[in-house]
Image (cartoon, rainbow, N blue to C red; front, side, top):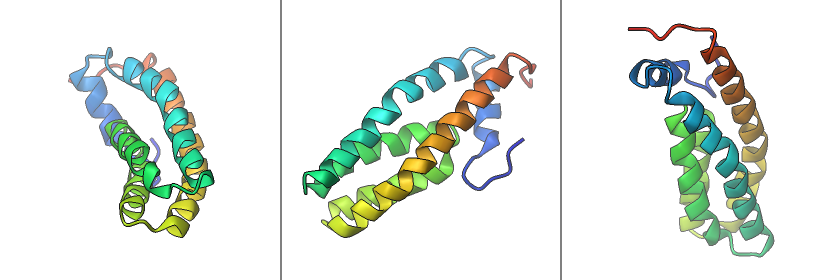
Length: 124
């Protein structure tokens, strides 16, 4: 079990229990496909000098990260969303840069957790 403040293993335990072993994999697959595009949209908004346009993809990524227990990324995306809404371009740029490695760690953690799912019984 990962005790990092970036990840909340309890969320995955709940998904395994509620989904009876059939919910985590599709959610993780969707996250794996959509999260990089959302990060790319935030990066592009910063590059184009339209940091406010990072708010929507940050909001979407915040939600999906939280649903899978990637709470560090969830919090960072919340910060990006607020900074974008406030028009703080420099802060958005700094936060997006900091979020990129968090996304990579989250993707790796979620992938590892899904591969472990087949080796675990669902708690009842």
